[in-house]
Structure formats: structure tokens, C-alpha cells
Length: 328
Image 1 (cartoon, rainbow, N blue to C red):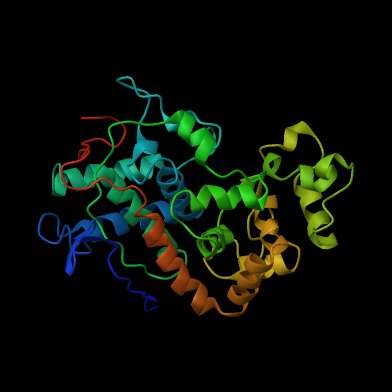
Image 2: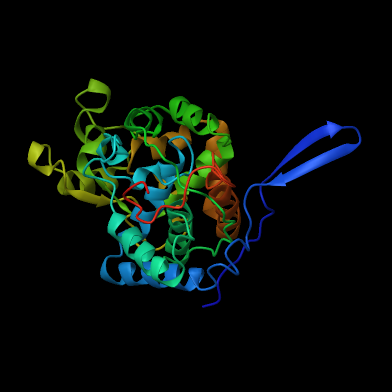
């Protein structure tokens, strides 16, 4: 199958120095490693494909890792750091603890890259490429990814607890967390479409099934058939909290636009997903992407690159870690 490719312009900062003089600084470059590590794309793609062949859930896990890294103080690979040298790992934050996965995939890719081109490719760039390849290998678009990120020298467990969106938050709160990072309301809807793949633990949505808002009743926005199915998967007992349910029960492992169709049918798994139907602007975008998969692929590529450029370190800032888990 030929990849669906969407090209984007580099993300640049335009500074007006003195009229009519304009200085343009491009932070990232699509050709950044073309000479220093020419086999980079092949090595990353092989590592992601190998991981997916063993565990199809890994596509969603890698994409989620990238998002959880970028949304906390920028795309600097801070989520990959373990507790060490004064670092309090973001892995232990509530949104990541016993949830974030795929670290060993990044470690394996990094080890292979260190053999091919030592101390050259940042962990943050590896994570960006791995998430891009995860989308493509799951059936989504191929998104050209600008590179040149450097790795941060710190982590913020407090930032992870505060800044990562929660499935329990109302739409206004979720939107505020996105827009605080320079993302738009449209980006919220588009990037939420990543929930076309992956799973969620029952405790993240179980209140919708039995005691929505303390009412003692299910969430009325859930379709009856979907509700009954979820109540079977997640019975009203503590032992079911860690059971898994697919975010998209129709095409669970395929990256497509069925997620949006599910929302229209009252079959959004997380409350934060179904909440997109409570606002006129977001619900109209949901309808649009449910009807036009090509538009979703196009816009997802744009929003993914936009997200991957949040707060990046370039030039002499940060470092190129030899191990993604430790500072040099």
C-alpha cells in the first residue's frame, strides 16, 4: 500500500527586526540527519514495526508517550528519564504511573542508533519519529517530521500531574490545557482522533456506566447497546478497575476516522471524548471528520507536527543523551 503523505512547511519564527528587514529562524529541519545519520528513518521504522508485530497496542502507546512528553514543558524527552541524579521521573506522575508504556521500544531503537551513529540522534527526535511511524504502520497517513530536537536536562513530575489532560475533565479545562501550549480548538478535536487506536482501563470511565455525576445512573449520552457492552467488560466492582476496553471498539487496531463516527453514535469511551459533542464548534468538526477521512488524515498530520514542535530545544540547548533514561 502506498503511504498517504501530507507535506507541511517547516515551523519557523519570523522576527521583524527593522522594516523592511525580516529575520526567519527555522527551529527544525526535515533533512537534519541526512548526512550525520542517513539510516535513521530505516532504523526507527524497523524498531517500531518489530514492536507492533509483538503487540498491536504499542502503536497507541508510542503515540501517547510522545503526547505526554510534549504537553509537559515541551518535546524534550523528559518523560523518558528515570529517577536519577536529582531527577524525579515523570513516569511516576498519576497520568503515567502503571499506564505509560513503550519505553523499552525507545531504548532498543536508541541502542541501535548509538551503534550506527553515536551521540547523534536525540531521544526526543526518536520519540517523534516512532510516534509518526506508529500512526503510519497502524494504517494512518505518513507524516513528514521535521527534526533537530535536543534532549532536556530535567523532568517535572509536578508538571506532568498538572498539565496532562485528564479524561475526567470538562471540555473547557481540556481545551485550556491545549491552548496554553499554542494548540487550537481544532487541534484538540484532531489530536483526540488518536483515540481511534488504543485501550483504556475501566476506572477511567466506569463512573459513566453506573454513577454518572453521582446520580446513581449511567451517562445518558451513552448508547444503550454500547452501555451494556461496557458494563459487561467493566462490572461495578473494584476488581474490574484495571480491565481494558478499546477506545474504538469497531476498528480497534486501525488508525482511521471511525472514532468520530463513534462519537456521533454515543459510543465515545472516555467522557473527555464524548464531551466533544457538547460544543457547537467541536461537534461540527466531529461531523466533518466522520464524513471525510482524507481531511482527518491531512489535518492530523498538521496537528501532529504542530504538537511535536512545542517548546523544542535546538542548537546548543539541552544535550544528546547516550541513554534515554539518564542524563549524560
